[in-house]
Figure 1 (tube, one colour):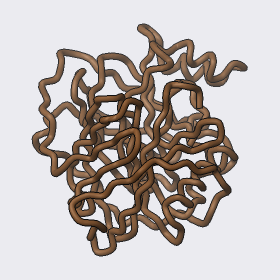
Figure 2 (cartoon, helix red, strand yellow; figure 1 turned 90 degrees about the horizontal axis):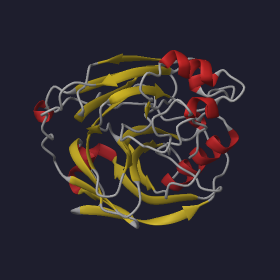
Figure 3 (tube, helix red, strand yellow; figure 1 turned 90 degrees about the vertical axis):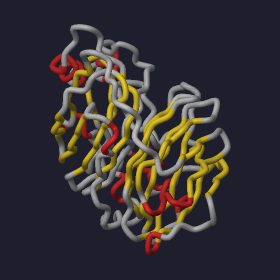
Length: 312
């Protein structure tokens, strides 16, 4: 679903001209038992955004744990209401990013690479200028570039993603709409991180299975409900992402329709009947990232969106 953002980055929940292209699948995890046998596959459908629903689901998800063999090339981002606490000095290469939300609202950690010599202070000033996002875009190395990060997470949740990051100075932003319609970044939710030094030799973590994303659906291993570390691979011809949501009293499609409608109306997604449990942000065709996620008891759904680089 679309959020106003200065880097033309597609959020993990996107809309294109009011139509949400979703690969939908529902997996019931009561007692941490997945539906189906060896895997679950969802086909792409289309749905139109509608209005918001009830309050978000309560969270019982334990924090993601670091994979021991993922190496020490780490970046930790804590999202508060409305600020980031960022620790780590990652080297270019495979970076293990742990994204923890300690706030009361859902947050994201979008990464945008700055031009050489540009600073976070300049970005803040640009966003406060009359030209706003356009002025900030001019400070980016490539406004069209998308970097794989953990996707949106709801309150009191944590998720971990290992993905490739090139060297550079990055700004971290959250453009989700706040209670008054103001994006979180306008309330001070932006930070910075530098990826520098020799290329990392960190190895990929051991995977408990593979989540396959294609242009027509998603396949998850039967062990996904138990949690762990999973390779997420984009075997399609377009960029794809993968997000997990804990559901309350509405089906998966209704929840994501609500989220789409919230972005369209510039209202908080936290008012929808569920909460995002994390996932993997945009993966280019042929790309692979590693998701470490642990789910509490409940009913969950997963979704993948796709885009072709157009403005959404």
